[in-house]
Amino acid sequence: MYRTIHGCESMHSDTADSLCNLGNVYRILGKLDDALKMHEETLEMRRAIHGHDAAHVNIAYSLLCLAVVYENQENYDEAAKLYKQGLEMKRKVHGAESIDSGIAFALWKSGNLYRLQGKLDDALKVHEDSLEMRREIHGHEATHSDFANSLYDLELVYQD
Image (cartoon, rainbow, N blue to C red):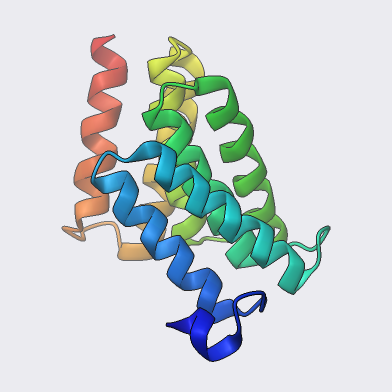
């Protein structure tokens, strides 16, 4: 629909958002090749909109979405590269010492990937950083699902 409104060749943020959402749906359905295609197109469009060398929260999000797809495809090297780029961009946008849920998410996902790669010391470090950031965001006594996810994944690292 957005392509009809804005034109098929239009580089518009609404179109990029729709492509990204479609990529997420494809990933959830297990259609990883389709998800990859949508997320690559989204990233290309967002870079065209915001600048190819720009640090922008939407570009960072696209990098992280691509990383998740590559992780699901068990292409861990590409996933690691994209998680790192997305995390670095999030820190550049929000500030290196910023407390941000997107940064916490990127750390958490990186920790999961490190565990899958057998890099347990790295996994432990970034999971602890993610948990601490999530505590800062939600409060130390909060009962948020992010805590449960972080604690569970820390347990998996200790079990490995």
